[in-house]
Image (cartoon, rainbow, N blue to C red):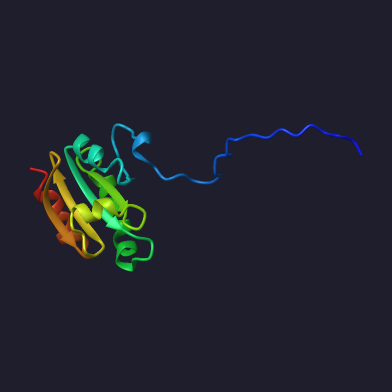
Length: 136
């Protein structure tokens, strides 16, 4: 038996596979929803003029049902509206701060101030009308 040197490292290897886009990876024009945490929520809402926040969870069927609509609208309104997703299971502080009692809940912020909200899944037409209402 021969003794071979063993190298031990303290650094974990990065996970393989696609990563979730976070605020630190932001591009000038956001054409997809960004995932934020309790820690960076306030900063993101204040940095962008018009933000729509989708409070959701993996287990929530209505949340999963509206996810494709949110992604489409993020593309359609890129440069005009920033869509943000907050996982309520992983980030309980922010939903508590805004008294979110059920999901999906979507909060609309303009200039860092809450201006509108939608509770529950809503069809695309009426939801898009709400989005447009706050563009002016």
